[in-house]
Image (cartoon, rainbow, N blue to C red; front, side, top):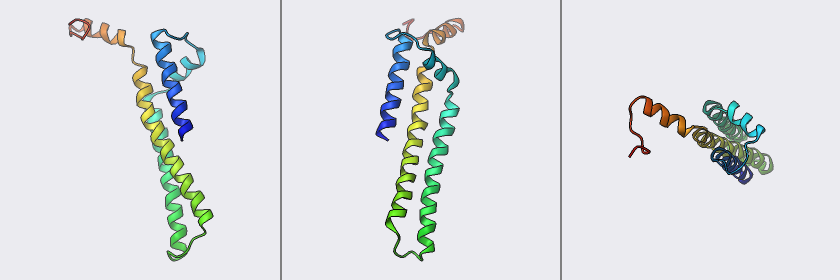
Length: 125
């Protein structure tokens, strides 16, 4: 899970740096930002978290099948760790999609639309 945090952080930094001109724009990064949408990230994150919850229900079912007695800890631990990993990755993707979506907003377009509609923005003050 630390790897997913580092990967998403690198993606955030590259997107921002390319947007403000600190790094040259790269085709693969533009493809990701064009094809990615907030909805896709939210659904993917929720699906992964739901899969992790299903792992927990499966472990609970195994425990119920043993009349809530002793369990084979190796089997249940693998299931619980897999479920936890899926839940954490799902949450990471869910909230990272908001940041990626925010980085895709073009501020200049927003300012031009506000000026067209006669709305004052922070640039006008």
